Length: 85
Image (cartoon, rainbow, N blue to C red):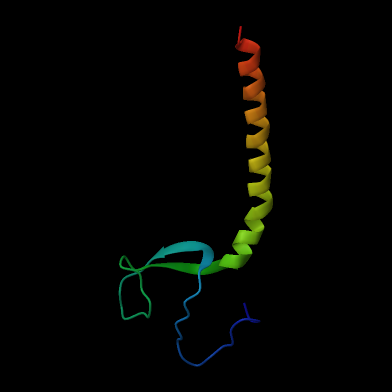
């Protein structure tokens, strides 16, 4: 993340999709920037994954699932053929 953004003395909005993991903390609204409507926060943030990194990480699993679906279709086609008179 440091290679993308630099630390600044003020809060700065960026419009980037990320997947954030952390422990949920139920706070109350007390003037925070970017607070959720229910004031739930993450303390601590354990991981930040940028959208393009997440898509790349999913690719092997998606390709494996697509291969499994193709194999199942072949098996079903063979089973249907075997059941035909």
